[in-house]
Image (cartoon, rainbow, N blue to C red; front, side, top):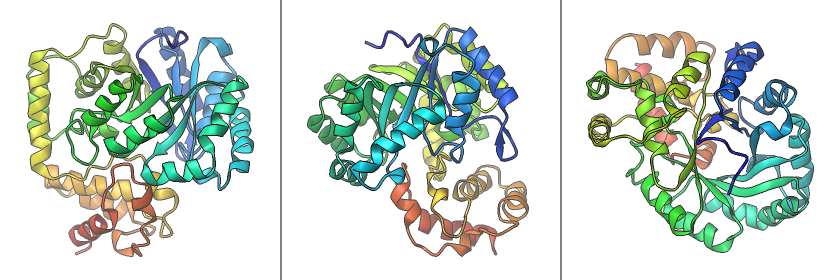
Length: 369
């Protein structure tokens, strides 16, 4: 169906190599070249990624350096950047210009939930995107999705024109009642929609495992912790693409090593992954994937994902390191958990549906004694 896509592994451009606040183009060029030379060609971006720097990075490191027919590029329509139907086309054209391309191979209605879907319908966003497809500016039309399976079923029923669905899928969230990875995958299969997987390593949580969980994978004497997570997602029925947000060459080379000649997890590996899930579920860790959607609109500039990471690190390792980072790195110039004014903007955009305001109170109690 998607002949231009060469393999089942894609470069997610939400986490890129950085020099301070700027994208490290020199490092990214090397990573893109390695990715392409290894036979992969799928790239995924959105206007808000890397604080609106991602599309420009795509332009500088991909579009300006490779023939358009050699790579596949996905972009998205995000609710934060339009208020009415008339805003959509100008925004879309600005995305084409930012990436310096004449069309997008895939264009997704971004981060669809029940509430956001209603807003998109009110603005005729799906209809506008389908018009752009008819004009050849979009090759394939789809959605990225963050809600329960019944909402996904509603969207796919109302818009059978959807060609592809991007969902969060990893072995910890597979049967999680909040994320419903398995159920969402089953809905996609019911409607015969190919699946793109995001967050296969759960924002890095399935890379930096607690020691007890990591031992189950180390005992396999196989690949990296990331390899089991990505191969799990890629091996699920109906999945045609798995994205990984790679921020350095080491991650790139590791991912390529097992995705170039992909094989699904065998029974022994699946059993180890199941044991890792049990460890995670027993620790009550905050299920944040560090997508950073919550930070853009925070009036107090609280770095919520970093504070949650400190909390998780404290739960796992029980040492002073998390306290140091909380006090001397992430809140040194303000933005403490206790400064939350409970406006709720973060919770409205959280793909994990976390009770962020309550969790920030827990963080403040732990680190601001």
